[in-house]
Length: 151
Image 1 (cartoon, rainbow, N blue to C red):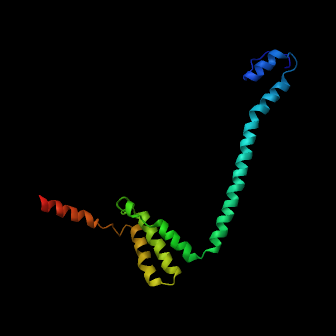
Image 2: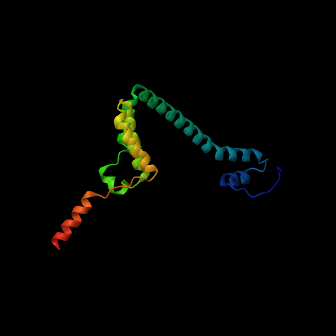
Image 3: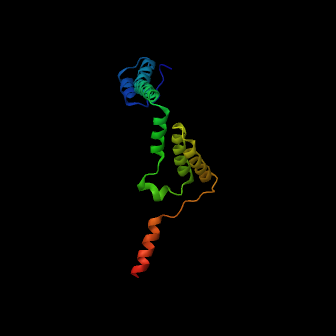
C-alpha cells in the first residue's frame, strides 16, 4: 500500500504526496486529524453549552421552589389568558379556551375557593367536549347596525 499511486481527495494530501515518496499513511492520519479536529471542538462547545443549560435549569428550579404554588398558578393563568389582540383569532379555539379556564380554576382551587373553581372547570370540560360554543363578538353586531342605519 505504501507504494500505491491513488489520487488524493484533499489538496493538502496532494501537496504532501508530491513532496515525499515515502509511506503515505502518516499523511493520511494527519489528514484525518485535520478533518476531525473541528468536530471535536464542536463537541466540546456543545458539552460546554449543556453545562450552561444545566446550570440555568438548576437556577430555575431553585427560583420555582421559592415561589408558592398559588403564585405559579397565577403566572400560568396569566400566560394562558387570551390577549386582547388575539381574541378574534383564538376565541373559538377550543383547546386554548379550555386551557385558559382550567388555569383559572386552578388558581381558585389553590386559594381555597372551590365555588369559583367549579364553574370554570365545567367550562373547560364544555370546551373540550364541544358543548360550549363561542358567542359572537358584540362589536360586530354594533358595526352592522351602524352600517344599516347609515344606508
